[in-house]
Amino acid sequence: MHPRVALTYGLLRLARWLPLRWLHALGAGLGILLWRLNGRERHHVEVNLQIARPQLDDRERARLTRACLQETGRGLLELGKVWGGSARHALQLVREVHGEERFMRALASGRGLIVAAPHLGCWELLNHWLGARTQLAILYRPPRQPHWEALLRRVRGRFAPEQIRANSRGVRALYKRLRAGGVVGILPDQQPRSGEGAFAPFFGIPAATMVLLPRLAARTGATVLFGFMERLPRGAGFRLHWLDAPPELSNADPLQASTALNRGVTSCVEQAFTQYQWIYKRWSMRPQPDDPDLYRISMAQLKAYCVAQDGRH
Image 1 (tube, rainbow, N blue to C red):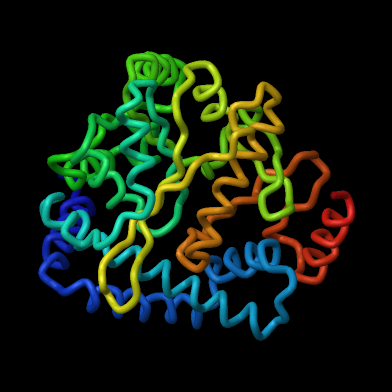
Image 2 (cartoon, rainbow, N blue to C red):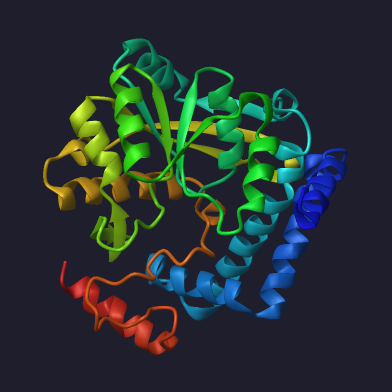
């Protein structure tokens, strides 16, 4: 095992002995440190919040940025509970399930189920929950450094999903699984490779959005549900939410379908706003080659850009 992988795994195993509220407290402290360091993580959050919450003044946005970074820290440290011990033990942290009847109905239909799980809350715990109830396959991109893949396979434990690479062979495997009534998990807010998606509105600004998930739904007739694992206050555990997908998600028009996909993600985010992965450069790809890099321009230029985009809708 690679030394860094072994060290990470050892830290996860140690962290599992700490109460979740302690891990979340330490994670919040890490978030405050990221805030005070004023590095790229804070900058990415500030840019994203200017786009997603343009009505806020600078002081309100600063408070929200700090809260988002604290949730980022909590999300990192809670992996000690999710990955450091057994999956079955981690599942004891799921206190509530909202909309479970939607999931059970989709599973019983035999038509196939696509779980659209945004980068919101604790999506790795959602993997455990699904793996305990069905044979799950997830679409994924391997880490840039291959030695981390062994860690991912190990920590996902007993209920580890089948990992299907995001290539043409993998896509064919997804179609086959869904047509057989299987369950597939996809991160719907991950930017596609250049030329493989559509630019659809996300919080009012065009964002590179995958068209694969809508195509899978349209061509297989599978049900699409949005799911996320909300982090409860004071280390109390997690609440799982299941939401229906917008009906336009299966539209033959890629732009309408991807717009509906982003609308579904937004519906999830608005229920646990600070727990979204706001450090991710969601708008880094732009529709036109001469469009500005939103993460490199000044905040004044970004505000002007957002106003101009708002005027086009």
